[in-house]
Image (cartoon, rainbow, N blue to C red; front, side, top):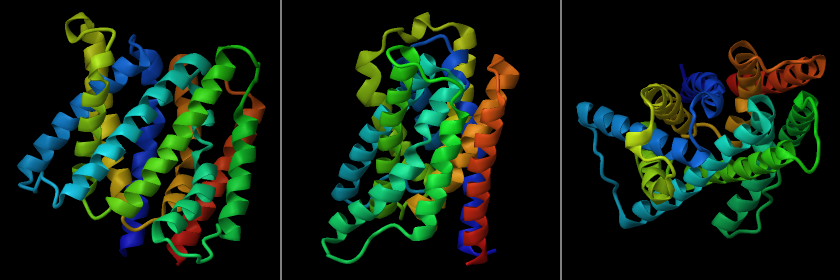
Amino acid sequence: MNPQQQSLIYLHSAVLLFGGTALFSKLIGLPALDITVYRTAVAAIVLFIVLSLQKQKVTLTSAKDYGIALLLGIVVGIHWVTYFAGMQMAGVTIGVIAFFTYPVITVFLEPLLNRLISKTKANCKPKQKDIIIAVIVMIGIFLLIPELSFGNQVTLGIATGGLSAFLFALRNILHKNYFSHYSGPHTMLYQTLVASVMLCLFVEVPPMDVTNNDWLLILLVGVVFTAMPHSLFASSLRHLSATTAGLISCLQPLYASVLAFLLLSERVDMWTIIGGLLVVSAALFETWSISRG
């Protein structure tokens, strides 16, 4: 198995777990920021224990890397807050769909940032294949939206999900260019730690007031649905572009929609099925094209 194929396995495993993350925005009875703080704190502790047990180096190699880790942690922390807030306002299905504009954002943002980073005038335009797949994904995402009513919580949730999408795309590209030489658990340790410390001053519900049921759910989302999938996702970026990772990750809305229907009774109509098929087809084609290469 070559490195690209192994990275695809990591990526698909992460996306499967990501699909269940959205449910916790409804299952945990806390504000989005509080969920993010406790979730990232749990994930950081677990990742530190894992790295220590594996006797891996926890420190970074340079002062520059600490600065990059700080930047990535800030970006991912705000991303997670807006991610959960969008779903709390618009519902899991619509919130996840709004967030999944990020593959399309990545297609256009990655070449632009790569050109700025390299400081060259080289042609960094997106590949025609990626643009076509991105258009298909975008159509599928819009078809998944059951109803769009401006001037209400749904509209605000979609806008918040769009902001979360931009931040996630930015984080992936920055990680790919500046931090991919570290392992997945190593990178996520610093990102979750920075996110938790940065946001902890704004917590509305202190730890002693969190119910036992919510703590169990926080532990579950922190370990299984944060530390594990984000480490796998970060590891996959070592051999896959942020654009490829973003497009393949479009399986997540389908997983989230199905789980929301089964566990939260969110209805799925025919447009959702058609849109989901478009999204899955685009993701599978991207996987096939990478595996063939």
